[in-house]
Length: 142
Image 1 (cartoon, rainbow, N blue to C red):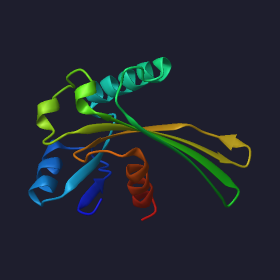
Image 2 (tube, one colour):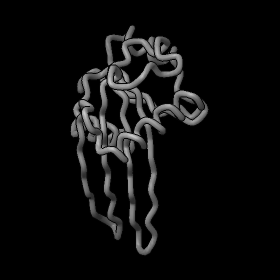
Image 3 (cartoon, helix red, strand yellow):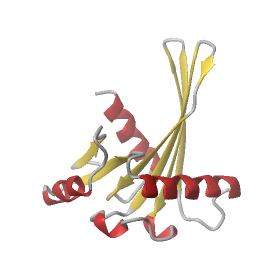
Image 4 (cartoon, helix red, strand yellow):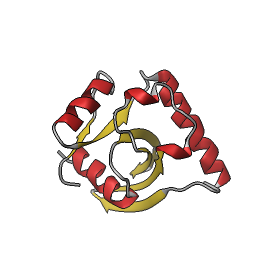
């Protein structure tokens, strides 16, 4: 994963950022935010449907991790799916070198409170859920 840039842009993931990263000879992992309503909705609906059907006939990479510490347990599941497995996404051609889409489900449990968080990513990498999960996790540790 050397030369990989992960970005969580609070103003929203921008296609121009993807181009700049590729021009710098790196790969991107970009968090998809809700301000890309159509694309976000497409990915959310597609992943929900695949989860309910067990990803039948879908090529994907999957990893699950459980981490414990400081009175906290966090379960993380990562699904990586090659872009050709999905119908054409909204403005898909604007995302230069887009290869895979990713869903990360985090379920942290602290004391007696459990929450569920879902995040989507777009990446130019050839995805391996285990490695990509580590890259995303390391980013949050910065």
